[in-house]
Length: 288
Image 1 (cartoon, rainbow, N blue to C red):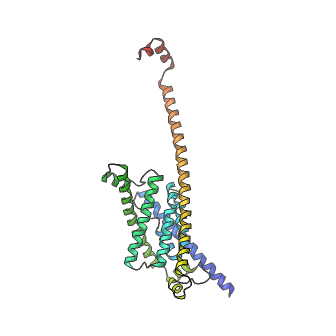
Image 2 (image 1 turned 45 degrees about the vertical axis):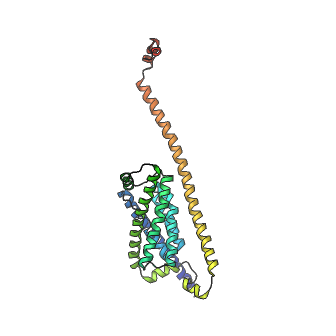
Image 3 (image 1 turned 90 degrees about the vertical axis):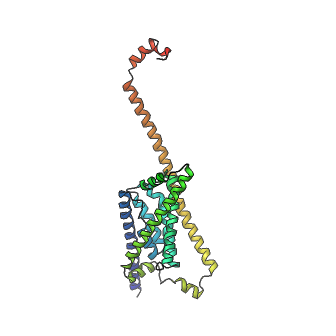
């Protein structure tokens, strides 16, 4: 009996690891296509939303963070958005447990919330750490709208970025729902409950049995959310400081290289002998 349980446990863990791998693979491939084609969409959270909705909080965060890590192979700035995608995983895991994706109202709230969160945070990161919008289409839209000052430009960028992120999360959510419908319910339950030694109680069962009081339950949730947000924000701050330091060093090296090229060009153009004759003839004193 024990051997059967161990075998079933290994099977369940295998399904969870496979779901994380597939989620990362889907995110990276679609994100790469979007990046190469210059689309104003990211498409890097389809796997994250699917894994977090089915597997829960931890698999969703792992999928989000590893997605951005692998995306650095073709776009180094993706590391700055680890915290954003981790927050989307947290939002998805909480929403899938407390609400229903099958209800249109709840689905709209989820898409609008995810788009607003990712749009606002990614806009702040782009403007604060990367020097401005990273997509040409968004840059073009900002230029067409125009702005008399930096405040209006930043505000316009945030609004446009949020709108594109809502559209992006809507597409990601729709694709995720379609993909999940093709997966048998038995496998979805295995992925959902695979990290537990026994089947976890649902929210309604916990309320009926009064296992957790309302105050303590929310206190635990707040502590967990705070811890995860602190870790994610710390990661962004660290990568931001590293990026600023690297940009500063690169700027210094660029200035040195420019100065060296200017000196080499002057050495090739200026004839020292003619310069000496020029000054001896009094040309220097007359300002000629």
